Image (cartoon, rainbow, N blue to C red; front, side, top):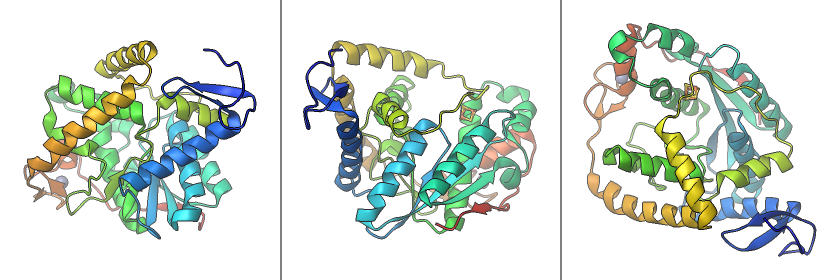
Length: 323
Ligand code: SF4
Ligand code: ZN
C-alpha cells in the first residue's frame, strides 16, 4: 500500500489509503470522514429523528465504542440524546472487562449507561444456559442460542430507558457477510433484518445500523486513532464456522477488486428492498410471554424450554450516570 504523497484533503501526513475511492487520508481527515460517512448513512436511510432518545448497544468492543463516540458527536447537530446499553451474558472471565470499557467511555462522554444481565432477566447466565441445554439442542450454535436472549435483553433495557430506537454497531463487513450467509443457507425469510428502514413489528424497538456503509478495517483504525480501549480476551464460545469462510472470501475479493464489498452492499440492499417488503410476515403475540413471534411461541420461550428454565423478567436494571 503506497502511503506516499500528502493527504488528499489537507496535504498532511497520510495514515490510510482508501483503495476503493483512491483517497489518501491523514489521521484527522480520516476520522472526520467517518463522522461524515455515518452522518450521511443516518440521513440517507432516515435512521434517527431529530430530538429522538436513542439507545446505543455497547458491547464494549471497538466497533460499539466507536459508534458511541461518533453518535455522541453527531447528537450535537441532530438533537438526539443517547443512552448506552450493555448486556452481560454471564461468561466468566470475558464480559466484565468489556463492560468496564463501555462504562468508562460512556462516563467520559457524559452518556447514561444501563446494564442488564441474563441472570437478572432470565434467571441464568450464558455459562449455565449452555451447560443445561438439552442434548437434542446441542447442534444449536452457542451464538444462535445467545443471540436470541441478547435481542430480548436489549429490547427490555431499551424499553425501560424510554428509547424509541436502538443503534447497533454492525458494519459493512457484518452486513454483507450476513447477507451472503442467508443466501448460502437458503434462509431468505431472515433478510428483513437487514432492511435499513426496518421498523420492527409493533412490539420490538426499532433497530438501526449507522455503520452499515463503513468497512470493518476503517472502524478498527478509527478506534485505534481515537484511543478506544481494546478487549484482551474473546468469548470462549465463539465459533463462527461458515462466517469465517465467507469473511475470508470477501476479503480476498476486496483485495483483488477494491470496492467489491461496496458493490455487494448495494446489490444486497436492492434484493432486500424487493424481497423483504413483499414478504408481509404475520406477527403473533407469544402464547407464553406476549412478545412478538411468528409461530405463537417466541424464540426466547422456545430456547428457554430447551434448558427447562422459566423466563424471569423484567429484572432489575443497574443505571449508571445521568447523561
Ligand atoms: Fe454470545 Fe457468541 Fe457473542 Fe459469545 S461470541 S457473547 S456466545 S454471541
Ligand atoms: Zn415468549
